[in-house]
Image (cartoon, rainbow, N blue to C red; front, side, top):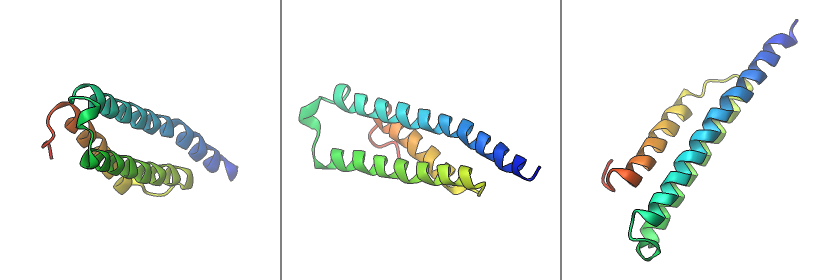
Length: 102
């Protein structure tokens, strides 16, 4: 009986992490597609554009790992989730609305 809570937590973590993986994949793919096709193309990619892409990727990686470890341990991960959500929306907003969305 004592292992039931651990099994439920592990099942919940496995189910929940799929949604975060999908959000990472979709937002990153849309960001890079917009970077290549909506902007003037490869000629517009400079140092600051690469820095921006690296920044978004690093924040997404850091927060995703925090969420995953929080789910696996059963710990609170709301701070990581807040930063993750803001990062995804800013990434998509910069891609499709305006470079000055923030």
